Length: 55
Image (cartoon, rainbow, N blue to C red; front, side):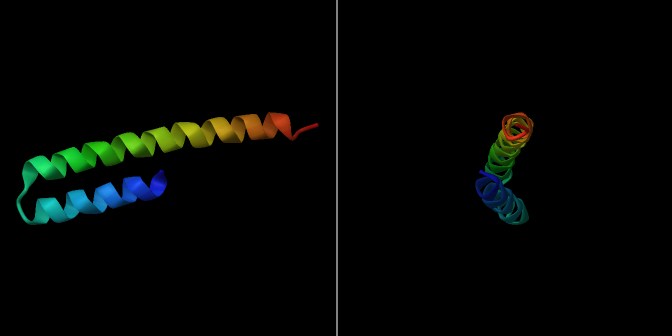
């Protein structure tokens, strides 16, 4: 998921350089949403991993 966020971020940068503001904004929004989903999932895995393997 982090890889897709990075891909959409690169697409947003390239689109912004070439002047495609709408595409850049959409790709940046998708990248941001994917990054936050990854971050929440990572924190959940860390929290449950610490409690499950603590035995």
